[in-house]
Length: 315
Length: 315
Image 1 (cartoon, each protein chain N blue to C red):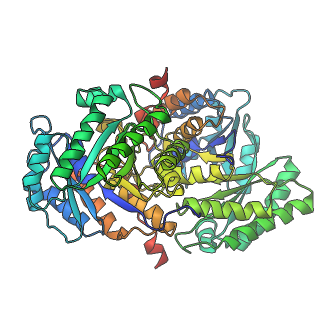
Image 2 (image 1 turned 60 degrees about the vertical axis):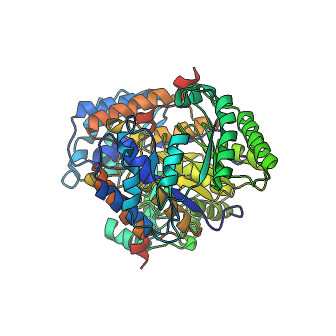
Image 3 (image 1 turned 120 degrees about the horizontal axis):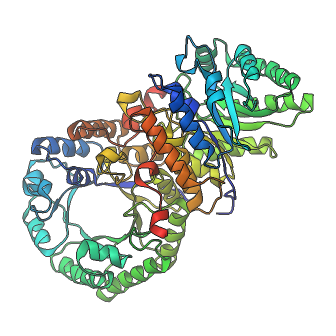
């Protein structure tokens, strides 16, 4: 029990993941309602939307209006995703966004080529330019994502050395600029992680950079999300990306397969049951999850939003 | 990693759980197909159906014909559930059933009253009579279930002492008859377990009866099923009840709430990924899960039956 953190932080990705993933477009007012509900839960970091090519991702065409519409709650960071300079420049002009500089590294060359039209090494070197841009613009480094850190549908199992090599690169880049390390976020992009792999990879990264904050971005593609989350807690990990209601995927074939992130309220529930604080009001979070499901219009993968937490049985 | 078992055994409860849980009745031939598919997966223990009052549970009215219809695979135990003497007598007359004597203990008095019309103490004493009946009929003791071992919707959190007191009772009953202890099966009947409670309760039972085989009956009511399963593996537990495809529940409100057992194929997948053997052919089990879903006629909660295992990416 000793290595469990006392406090776990959740970075909510549901709005961006969910509304981007779904095929249909949702009215701005409905999307705003979901984010406004999340603002009242105690979450401190909410990824609202992305600045991407609206021709490719029509659901993200009105991202500036989306940010304009939400009620900004003091103390909550409303963040955005961008993938290129154009998106970043656009994000900089929109009021109310907390700019955080993420970096994207790929442990799989093929996956990188499919996603970015360039190999993993080129992508890695581009991140060095991003660091310079962020420094120049006064945007703090947030997380260095290592995509496919547990396996890849194109390249299969990913050796641990690919992860640690990338961490060494990140460290060298930061050291040479006198910057502190960003969070090192291991992303189980396509659902290959299992609990022992979580321990192994976190152990390897921590050995290399003992002072870095390690984060996890987990998907519940194969039903192991909660087990992977618990395994990471046992390694002392205290920062997770997650999606309210499991937004961003659905385990049923009819909705395109099982891509969803781990579900925020289910994982918050686990933490609270084990005496780990999160700063989150679980009942309000469940309300937000139910609202998200009603807006999306089909069942979502979250559990306690359907079964309820245990509070009513204890009071 | 050291405490993980090398081999984990799954007791499949999907057919009984699933067809009993659903409101509609399914043709005998369809139910037989599901069991026959499970027989080819390597599972060695399949709970097919129950002998209960057909007026109360119409789906179980043709249990004898169900047993008669399935292709008995040598080496597979086809087991049944009964709740009273009448059901047991009926089960004894049906060919092809492997009779295993389960015992049912309740850590919650109120839950026992609601389920059995008698309190937990009376229910406990009745189990002593069951032991005598099983001995008399040459039926080996299988598992002593402790229901609501993690919490109860009527009584709230259940103190560990209620569990250990019951284990002491079971031990005394067996000792006085010179019988070996049955498996001690902690049942998370209504989905209160979390990973640290799993460790705590298994630890307490093991301290009391170090040589007993401990089993778990877990439900994924609140999304922690996989984490609870992994936590139990870390305690060396090597026997689990589970349901193919997550039969016996559905996480969506429209299908009656989140009552389902942990999903056999998702947990088998976790084991195999971590190098734990199960004797089960995962691909065939996924086929059986997909068949079960098509027979049931609505989406079931299993994950890899929708997302696929990783074998195709590795070959």
